[in-house]
Length: 362
Ligand code: SF4
Image (cartoon, rainbow, N blue to C red; front, top):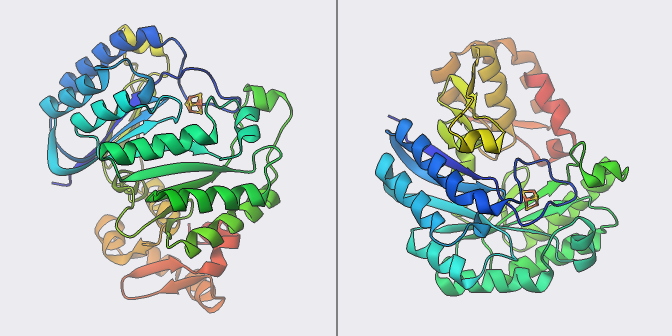
């Protein structure tokens, strides 16, 4: 049986960033009770093997000391976690201190995902982040010193007043610090947030130029693009995120966490107080075969692995290839996709018009 991924949501942050639409709150005093509810959920849903664990948020590094250990301990008690499992914790530079790193290391965290976003202090302040570039540097160095060397950093593109020069500087600097993974996403401004209310809307062309600038530098530093927004040094893909993109099963624990067992998607309540009081408010949704096929094609083509014929046949039979034969041949001739014995992948040219290429195939 396929091993699953486990996602644990920690919905606590020290303050709200001006663009954020994630489920999180600043009432860190509630963390202990929240972790109690998390452990109860783990007991209810116990069973199965997992080879990736991702503790995200919110900001897991703001948890009062001891709670991360309790979470990982309860995961190990309730699920069979593989010996070589990838166990990631997200952290923000202002709370990624030596105490957090020591606890993370001791409880088996072997990968860190750090919310750097940019290394321009003015931009960081503009989007309401609490840290500065110096703290990001110290967080990376402290993690490496603590023995967590598999470090990924998030960067944001199309921030207000951000330039391509800022993006290039951030990529060059993170590469010089020895991080293994960089995610570069365009800023998405959620409704009802401070940035949204200020009237700021990211410009798609500017975002595309910044993406190109980032990609050029990442390539020069030896990072491989293995998903449209994710780049890594050899062997440092996020194994957990690959499960999402390959439609593999995962269980999400905590408020607002999503799960997928191969046919049914479910999500817990986004109301943190409700979750703490023991009401999970789970909503389930059966995915039809055609929805699943669309998702597989859409997500698969965004990765370097593309759409794999063996998986396509096993899950959906050979109908898609027959139904899309004309589109596949036209896109191949146009130089947008490559067809091999293994499957179909996008070419470099297609990255500029990715959405329209994918739309032709679904
Ligand atoms: S740290 Fe992340 S989750 Fe928390 S407010 Fe900022 S963007 Fe949202």
